[in-house]
Image (cartoon, rainbow, N blue to C red; front, side, top):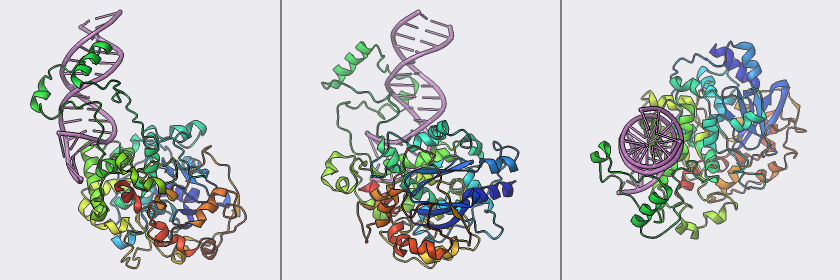
Length: 488
DNA sequence: ATGTTGATTGTTCCG
DNA sequence: CGGAACAATCAACAT
């Protein structure tokens, strides 16, 4: 079964003709190919979204294949998988985000099938999305659901417009949640966070008490209770006694302190983790997040946690750097790309520590420390984590199978243009030559890069299309910067 | 101590 | 008394 499904997946959309930085070239069913300029993709097991070069997401549906080949999509038996050995840190340095793609895209496996673990990864429910920026760089928060929403609601938004494949099956994997590589998580988050932050408004409006008044709290609170009819917290019974001092009521009017970087990180990450592994408890998630956090590297942690959110920081430029509408804290979330396997790794005890090690800060922050990227030693059969940052040409060689494809532009599934969130990430602190010219190209959508004309049959083509630099660390460094953004 | 999320529990009010 | 609405608490972890 696994194979079957895997195959389906591979056949449907995982032929990765090339992947570089934020661009993904995919071979679609019907021999069509597309360049996903940006993306983010969401997998709910049946489908994947890929941001198209034109900024519109492309839905790659695999459901047909699945259906035809498997009895029920709903119940996959996914045996616990042992994640392939984690890649060397060095391998990760570039590609957090590639990692996720690889899981999907490395259709190059000898058998043409994706490794089981890959398939599992795809199976996971929510992964997702990102680049919520409009082509012009505006955040699409209003148009696209936040990641969290997507994760939890399982893509409701998309589903609504798309009958078919995209059903999330959140619960399905709970028990099998499998391993996610930290790197993937991180990379995913990187992309995603921007989204989530775009809609800062806490969903839980309930707590969002707009405490109107601002006088003495006590009085106020009392008045509030009276007026609203709500009950004031009566002397807490049992639990409170337990830890009475734990929470003292704080002044509603009191300015909120900046949330710590870790908190933000947690926020972004947990959604992804949960999405993939609904059954994960808070404790589990917390541990995972902690591991990931560790993996991020001290360097970043050291940065003052006053992110953009903090007003005080506004003096700092992140805001300036970022496109207008960008949330200050636009660290791309890892969340979206979490793969089950990653979680599994964590859960399985697969030593978070080791993971952390693996994900050393450098891995995550290529841009920052592109330093010693040992030659990619990733296995031929690339396991899950083949996120390696290969030089463009190298990637081309590896990733682009000789496939002939005919250009076939596909109608964007989503109304909302996906944006290159990357821009955001990049804009802030460009360690290198980061003007991603190509980015500007993409938005045009119908540009040359688009599915049409170009006939990316050969890696060379791919390469030529995209300057080597793109795949280089510099480009990939976008993700890595995620954390930095948090910390910014 | 505070923050992260989500579930649970406890409290109060109303019909 | 049951239901609704809301607040408080808890979990693990980092700051």
